[in-house]
Image (tube, rainbow, N blue to C red; front, side, top):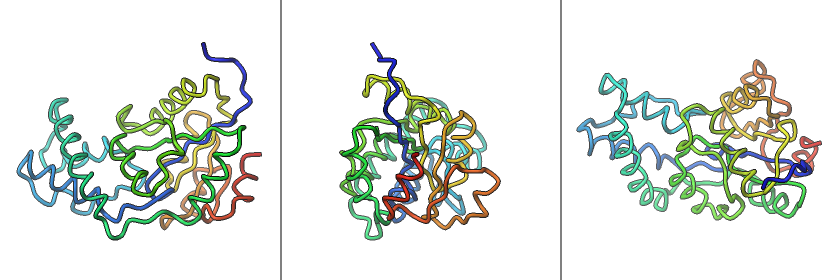
Length: 233
């Protein structure tokens, strides 16, 4: 039974651009998988993935290249093959990097009994976990919401809350749940379901980009632990 106590705060972290950058491993793996299954090369073209969920990226490419959405069976085949190929590319990617301050921050937060760390990411869980493993930070996140749960980011965040409540054995107050992300889509999704938000300017965004979405806080990056903690007050 889930306890009614709400003493812990829930932190839902985005992955790409917030915690790390893969150096293009996802693009390469998806292009290879799409070419194998549908015979279409260079499917990525000029796609902008920032803030988009993996299912939404699949839909966008399929509609553009095939003129239709994928069937459920095609979607599953593409996801499975993509993750197979991604596993090889992520370990070989020479430009993989953790964003500034990530490990010290996660280590500090993980030692605070009043906080529960989870993920709120558009990545499929398999690919997302591989990214975290490459960066040595998978152990900080026991659960979360992933692209397997939904196409829309706000629904992924709701799934992240539900999964976290099961693991933590408690309910989380939405006003004590924080979404940490690097794109406007992260903040808009948090706003849509009444969560608080921390925008980080780690992937080329500016204060002006976020202004229309009114995040609760904006940080340059994750290097200042004191500044991050002040956002949770």
